[in-house]
Length: 128
Image (cartoon, rainbow, N blue to C red; front, side):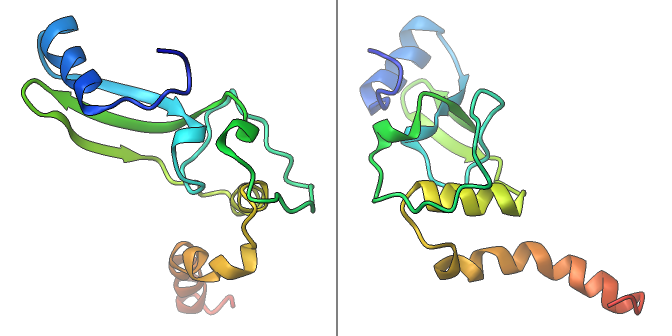
């Protein structure tokens, strides 16, 4: 296997059952395998000032960086649970959407839940 190859169930089971002999966390997945909303690790540089829209860029165009995602692998099962840290920086999220060939305006609904607590707090303090 090489970097950027997705783990299949048989790979996950081999890791948990044979290589480690128990439960194991796999983390820092290649960003090309995960979704745009997963937070990139520090090995990725996003140009937040770029206005260019990607043309449905392929996963290989998205670099060799990693994102803050994990899977818990269990013997006899493979992946039991997975998760990730979500991108909370609006300017980075919008830049990633553009990089992935997506229009940030189409994802307004995704950003609202993150902004709602802030707006409610400001309203409560009468600062808004």
